[in-house]
Length: 72
Image (tube, rainbow, N blue to C red; front, side, top):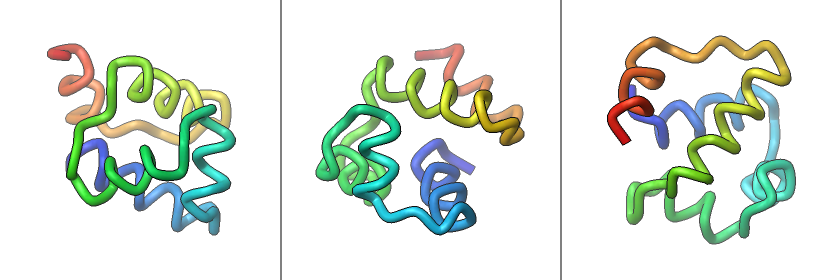
């Protein structure tokens, strides 16, 4: 699973809109939309914001996402 796929999965499980997640991560709605559609990859800061969001809510992060994040 890629970070954009995981981001969409978590957002849907939390019943959040893209706009709501964007506010939580302090990014634009269009950034979330483009990340989830894999039009662009999240910036390192965007990736960190999402991973911090998950950690703060005790949402488990799959190892492949953590490994992918270390490569960036």
